Image (cartoon, rainbow, N blue to C red):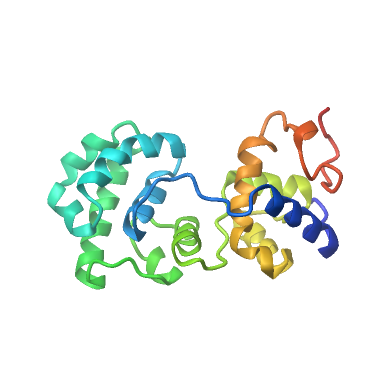
Length: 214
């Protein structure tokens, strides 16, 4: 297990992330809490770019649970056919829409437990919605954050929940809101899986990764 960086190193790292990107944004396109929820649910095992291509036309027609139900499952399938596991995801989106209408008056709930009770919504999806829409310091750990956290010593853990706890326990509070966005972007564009771009890394001198590339 990678060692955990200390408070001073973490503060220096996130100060640099903040200076480079003061207001990092998620890359999934959305217009309200509902379309964000659907987009994140569709993004499992898919790229944000691919989801955005599929949902631009979809959200123009169905940006509320009521409109999604009116659209119907087959029309939904036609919009998201290019996304992996689209049949199963379409069923979940339709079931989710029905529950939101029946149990939440068409509104997206803002508690993790309520969100995770919806079809196709796991902890990561719930945390993304809580963070991006309601600005809660929820940490959505994906493969990028898991890799960066363990490589660097920023937030090491054996599984995603351990990495999530490491962020919550060790990253200074004033950086919590944007922490997962900075880590995702760093993992997506710099600390990539096969050959990390260490020469371009703004935290290279603080990172604990021993096999740095030139």
